[in-house]
Image (cartoon, rainbow, N blue to C red; front, side, top):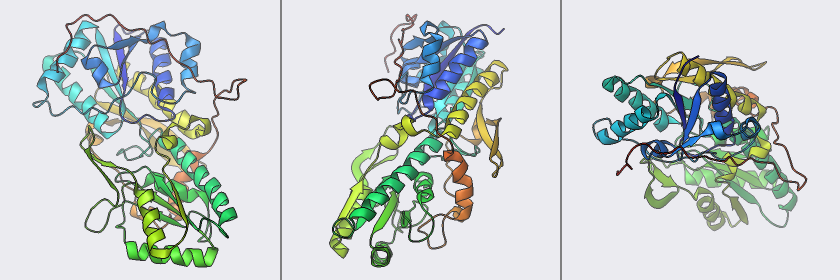
Length: 418
């Protein structure tokens, strides 16, 4: 059996199934006889030498972790810059790894996390330190390159489709004397995957969602108003799903929160649903309601997709397997081998092909008029939301989610000042 320590950390926005990946990583690590540590709050925990000893957790708690949403070890939005610009931080990472005999580093996140994993592998090679780095995929945005889908997306997509279908029934019931237009805001900065998933809620032009606004298509307000009006006159009501990242033809975000940029340098978005609702009310005079699910769409473990859960655990197990085999600077990705019946497998892909790349919605997934999804999109999306993976419930009627002990590892270095 290999000797040494594996460090696992979570990054970026957590998902309904990221802890399922963590559970699979820890269980696989134990089978290989490894000591598995976790960084508290992602890469920051490694920099600060704030590490959690998962060997202190009972097997039952690690199993229950797969049913628990959130990020059990804490996550972060913290982007390391280039090897030159952040040299001291990369050197600090190697110091921490060396101090704790860390031979394997697994970073669970999206585009920026893949980039961090790649750079850590490069600095380790430069120092001649024997470290194998593996990126582990996760994001509800579904925008990672190479992989067919991203763990976390399927459950968020299921939540979106279910929520839009249920809300549509509510609107339809009240439309005669109350709300005529309902606007639902979906996550998606540059890629409209979650907005597209809402399209699974209905079939045909008269079933909700009637209009989907994608960041891949320029937003034309006048045309949008005309289509809302036509839908209300034809159906009696209208459900709109808008991706948070929709832009006008000149590239301006329709909803810019005005709060500058986040830690990854991305424009801080939010409020497109409220903005559109106000514009529709002013222009067309309809009573409008809107909703911003925000964290709800990515934390809804109670309605997780079984497909998503299986894939989240599969990439975790594969990541450990790749690590102990010395497959450096790779990521386990999901490869679709068949649509109907749906079949998939896990394969390694170079981090260099994934880091800092973004996959947007294919043109043939968007309806010709720009306001809905195609059959090709349905064939892709439907298997990802299939199956229910309900958590266990307690007598109080609430899910039984686990809280780990989080035993800290005693530091061996001086505190990091940076």
